[in-house]
Image: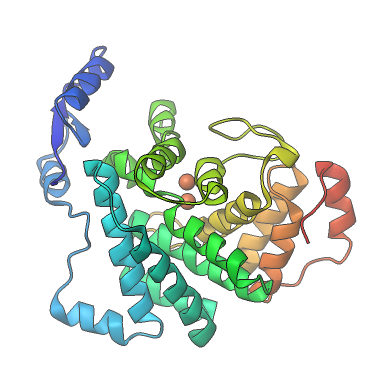
Length: 308
Ligand SMILES: [Fe+2]
Ligand SMILES: [Fe+2]
């Protein structure tokens, strides 16, 4: 099914109009008073990245490019599935996730991420970078194949609920308004609901998709979980998600180095947002040195047992 964009008047009744548009089958909205080129871009924005045969050949020839291409195709299928409400094959998703894990083993996480940054953009780039970072984590932390498989699938699936968020919000350069942020906050539950209806995804992966924006101190969303209520897999996914968001390339913000990303994550452990255990393992996977005393300090601050 194709995407259906509805044009909605801004003003007091905007919320009601959005609800009515949804009832009529809208898959995304644009609020009136936009530039003509914005409208054209929105209406022509493909879910599946359009590439010339030359660009596609370049991607496939890049280190890790074949697995990056397959992961991108799986994401396109997922986003289209969430938008249309139709089921998609999750076997393809698992195969793509396993392909990324193998490819990161071959070319290295840093190189795989560089290929993705060069050939993908926006939300797809983010989802793929999280998957690549998760692969680096799984290899560096020597996860068992079952644990690695769960993490890789959770990473590829974690933001599919963003398919229901209007593109102009997702791609907005700069800070979101409080209303826009409220819209973005719907995505973990949207992804979780879609998988619940159409997938045979394990509960532990479902949990990670729903709770990847929770924080140890209870200030996250959607369920304001705290400390030990957040599962080990979800804590790892959250660390990978933040790391990937920091090292991604967007036209309007600086790309951070792995060292800088780990520094931000350490700050987040000190304020009891993110668990130190996964941050330490992630730093090790990307060759970033940490102060040796960090473990004890953060355990005290966060009041939770770090993961190994
Ligand atoms: Fe997310
Ligand atoms: Fe994310």
